[in-house]
Length: 425
Ligand code: CAO
Image (cartoon, rainbow, N blue to C red; front, top):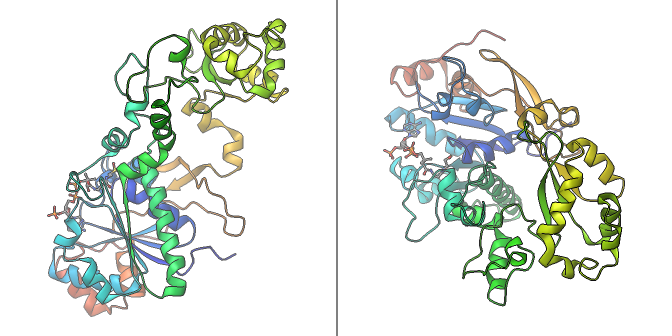
């Protein structure tokens, strides 16, 4: 079966997390992704958070599946020559260097277009044009500048970053969409274009509902926030809402049986309007079905603390999975708080290819997250990440057509470091 992006060749000049998540998606969908790395060092994440000495870290392996690796010093004259050959052979160049770094390598948009008018140049930067455009940015900076931190956590506590990598992986996802859109546009325009995605913008896009609430706040209190029921006045900016549901269906994280010793013995419980009656029956408050203080969603808003305290008295009698089974019979929206251990062991996630076991020549077997996007006509097979420079020789020969003598000259110049000839696996 052919892959959706078969025939697309990507010059992957990305590092750390945001860029690599984007090119990993393209590789999963069938693009030939050629990761260019500095000789001897490679992507800095190869050595970061190493759990096994001298073995590519899980940080690297889990972000760089299905790619090929070539080492190339882009500041060496011969290296530049090879790089320009790659620019001519590829459809997309993806990079997430610090602002200005690509230009300093001589790869300006004007020169790239001249060399290859069909090239799509896709970049991640921390900020778009404006006062912070020259800043270097990592995940948590983007979460803070994009509106996530100020709206995450509890009202009485400091701003909070989230474990979901919305700044890095979130931006990578946005960029991948920009790239496939530009590829589609190229099918009828015949020319490439730039695709820029700033991490601040991507986070803000994911925090869209909070900008909604900012404007609602100008017209009155946010009644679905617990703070409304508690009688705490609102300020002039959207507050942190703890674990309140974002939408019009109030929800909370509630303790379940075992919470005293298990940090994840909790359930997210949503008091969705249409299932209010079964909720009342299950928690043993049948009179709340008709009591005017509780019978309608609007009437319930000032009593959310009382209601959830009562529901929690019920959830604490059941473990989270038992509670799920009971509540699901009545279509009550709820979900267990799953630990990473539980997720790693979840059979359904394994069966669907979302959690995948991969074998690696120096690491052995490890778990990774497969593609969360499933294309029926282009299934993803997760292949291990490349070793540093593993495909240098292969790419110089088969993609760029260099001869033995030319390859010896390139190697002698130091542009690619020492080419390793790997034994067949
Ligand atoms: N050969 C030679 N030089 C190379 C090279 C290669 N193959 N690959 C990279 N380099 C050079 C770059 O040209 C740059 O040199 P100059 O500064 O002299 O121009 C240098 O390596 C360092 O690049 P950098 O500034 O991008 O790297 P850094 O580690 O200092 O910063 C980061 C990292 C992520 C903060 C920065 O790249 C950045 O802000 N990127 C954009 C935002 C982003 O993607 N952040 C997400 C990171 S994931 O949390």
